[in-house]
Structure formats: C-alpha cells, structure tokens
Length: 328
Ligand code: NDP
Image 1 (cartoon, rainbow, N blue to C red):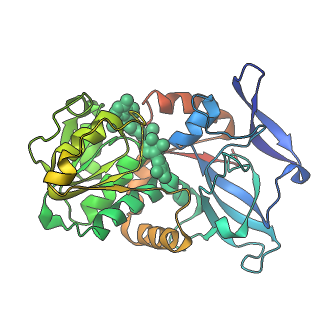
Image 2 (cartoon, rainbow, N blue to C red; image 1 turned 135 degrees about the horizontal axis):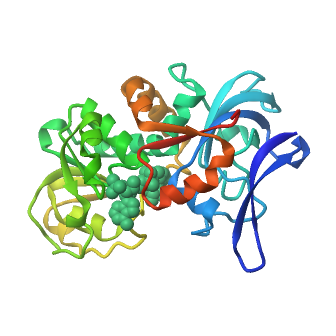
Image 3 (tube, helix red, strand yellow; image 1 turned 60 degrees about the horizontal axis):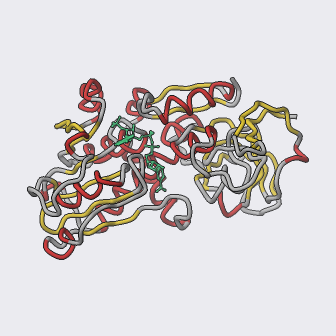
C-alpha cells in the first residue's frame, strides 16, 4: 500500500481532495512503476486540487503534473529498477494519475533520466515551472536574443516560472527587469538577479497598441492585458516567450507590434514538448542554474499540506517553488 492524494468530484461538480492508501493494483496502465520521492505544487496542480479550473479530465485522479523518483519495475528495456527518473507533463495529473502519490505508473516515453547534478528534491525545486522557464529562455535565444540587445522583462516574477527565469537570464548576462504585484519582495528578486523591479499594475490594465520601446524581450507567465502591453512595449524586432495565464487566458492585443515593429510572439508549451527539447532543457538547467538559487527559492511540504498550499498559491501568497516530500 502507498499514500496518495486522491481527487474526487461530487455530483454538483465540487472537487474534494483526500489522502488515501492505495494498492499497486489501483495504478493506471503503463510500462514503468516509479517510487516517487518528490513532487511539486505547480499553478496547474493548484487549479486541479482546488477544482478552480477543469484541469482534471477524469475522476478519481491523483494530481501532480511532475515528479522525480526511482524506478521500481519496468517492462521497457530503457529503464531498470533503481534508475533515477523525472517526469513533466504529458497529461499526467490531468488524464493519467500523477506525482502526488508515493508511487506512479507511466509510459516509458514520458520519463527523462534525472541529470547527475540533481537529487530528486533539486529536480522538483525546479519542477515543471523551472523547466518551462528554461524552455522560454531557449525560445528567446532561438530568436537570436543576446545580452547586448537590451533588458529582458520577466512577468509573474515571484512565481515559479518567474523566479527561475530571472535566475537563468541574469546568469546568462542579461539585464533582467522583474514585474510583480509584490513590491515588498524586491530584495529577493534582486538577489535572484533582477536589476529593476516593475509594479505589475503598470502592465495589467488595457493599454495603447504601441507604447514606448522598453524591453528587448520578455518571459511572460501572466497573459491577458499584461501580455498585450508587453508586446506593445518591446523594442523593434523583440520577442516574448509566452507560457502562462496567471492574469487570464485572453489576449486583448492589436497586431501593431507584430506588423510595425517585427515583434515575435513565441508560444512555449512544456506538456507535449518533444523528448530532445526536454533533454536539452534539463541538461542546461544542470549546467546553468546554481544550487543556491534552489535553496533560497523553495519551501518543502508533505502530502497532507498540499490542499491548503494550493489555495495559498492561487491567492498569490507563495514565493518561488514548493516541493512535496512524499516521505513526510
Ligand atoms: P505561480 O503561481 O508560482 O506564479 C504566478 C505568478 O503570477 C504569481 O506569483 C504572481 O507573481 C503573478 N500573478 C498572479 N496573479 C496575477 C494577476 N492576476 N495578474 C498579474 N500577475 C499575476 O505559477 P507558475 O510560475 O508555476 O506558473 C505561471 C503560469 O505559467 C501559470 O499560468 C501556469 O499555468 C503557466 N505555466 C505554463 C506552462 C506551459 O507549459 N506553458 C508550464 C508551467 C506553467 P507576482 O506576485 O510576482 O506578481
């Protein structure tokens, strides 16, 4: 038997989260069974656990869009018992039982070898948010961005994606500006590598189609008016890597920045990203993200703490990353 967070839905579509003891036989089909050591609470997990958004496609569901652990048994020759692995996305925690349990059974294709540089706690201190931050950096660089082009804005700066994006970009030599609603966290954002802190209220209301050219590029985890204003404020030829919707799913923008300033809107998806891109992102994280960033940016909780933590995360009260220790 093992412990899991199980989500059920009542007839009136209210999501309930309970800790349950499950048996190996309860696990969904898959080639590889993993003893999960650490998982996390990402924004999407918080939506799933609270039921605030229809992230979960079938009930009962074990949430958790990512995990790191050790292979217990494998019907796939690529993995053997004892291998250290991690998983991000692929619908795990949405359509297939996920990482907020002491065991998971998944497709072999979904697993990535854990880089030697990390233990399972480190890997989940990065988690899907940090891996997505690296995908955003890769997207900006693929569009030719270099530090000489000018400052890069990171929105949702105190969040999981935001904090890791700031740390990565600053260590690559970029001048990083951080947009946040929590100006009281400016010292922390500067310690991560931001040189300027921008009040997110200056970006979150409807704005003009073209505005003063301020940033060479941006990592946006917020969407909605913020993304529209960011596009309108990019320098000629700038790129924004758009990965999130913390303000909203809408994009009330005009085409002006794209057709008059050659701005590029680069979409970033971590869930279905191809294997080679995942390996590149995790290899770069292993090389480029200093361990001390993870220590200063992470709180660790147990499985029973997850429902309350999900509420705090959606209320914007969590700074950085949250790791779930499945042994607690
Ligand atoms: P977090 O909750 O950790 O961070 C989100 C941050 O956004 C908050 O900390 C806050 O930063 C800011 N924010 C919250 N509400 C608002 C608002 N109404 N207006 C403006 N800013 C707001 O989430 P993550 O960093 O884990 O994820 C960020 C987004 O990226 C989410 O929408 C998530 O779904 C998405 N995402 C997408 C992925 C993909 O594959 N495309 C993968 C991972 C995440 P502050 O307090 O500093 O203002």
